Length: 438
Ligand code: DLL
Image (tube, rainbow, N blue to C red):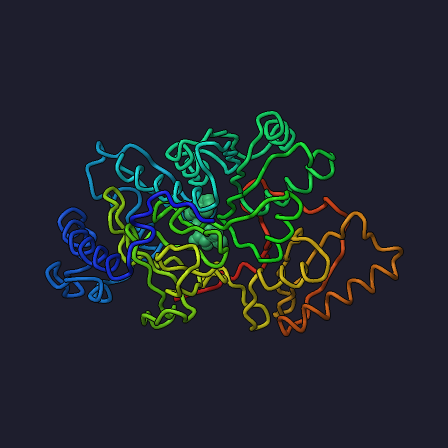
């Protein structure tokens, strides 16, 4: 069963949604050209006038925008309205360089929250539900986004924010939370903690909406089992609004993009060439309705696949795969591309959980990669020999997945720091960017 928040949009015939996108794009390009100096300059440089954009087929004439452009224009360079018409600021969780700040008018907030309400409805939430929001509140978009979506849906909203796991579980049992929203790594930790305390039978959760970081199907399976729920993915980024740019439906097979507000493209990250649906590449978004921070052709660095295949939930909105990695976060170790998700898949397929950390270093000009993995409490190695055997087994499995030698160290449960927000999986000690020149 799939519930729609805006059935007329979510199930609109594809030709109609494409037509709506074309109309909105023409308006939006005119709007940004007149209101944001950056676009006027960039389009003039590229020799493109607003009149050249007659519909979505002309989108490829527009230049791309990158995170560097946002940094250069920080903080007000992309504003499409006077600052006095903005009512909210949010910011990325980025830890290096200048933060990206995003601005919202009241109407921009309404659109964002509508997108989140669609995600909640698709996960089966209604007015009858108690929505437990354990994403961080504040500058991070997770808490405010799902909170707003839950209000819009009319659900009872518990603005828990992240942290204080005992209190989370107490509220969950006392107030009968039915829908949980947090990062998948925190959901896994909550599942672990609930089972340890033996209170699973007091939990009324039926669904969870987990996003903001990569997670695998195996991790989904583990979370569903430990919390006794259906776990849905949700995707978004601060620059484009926040969570709810796309969301999973009952099919749990790709996330529907809110195409009345965003056009998605997939490009070859090296050449910038637009790729046909079904091919893997970097996801690029164009905002059709945002006024305060209107990004056109923004390169997300997330690697994805788009699909227009019919979905059994009845939604006609295009689907994107889970992000399969990042064109920038991908690690190159010993010349081999390594995505943390590949390592996670090996661990979960071999009876471990996603409690691991990767340590990448460079010794004598040669890369090393080590992986600390917690053993499960009920699967502790019997002795040192057994531990070495189990480690060697994982080394072999990782070698066949990645083609390189990863040093594996099994460690005691609960020794790898847990995260209440996005998990820190990689420690790269190589300082690669310090040596780089252009
Ligand atoms: O993480 C927004 C969000 C909040 C999404 C809550 C979902 C739930 P940022 O902090 O700007 O925004 O980070 C955006 O996080 O470009 C992806 O690389 C990654 N990301 C977001 N959702 C997913 C997901 C929020 N479902 C960046 N799967 C994006 C994998 C995700 N990666």
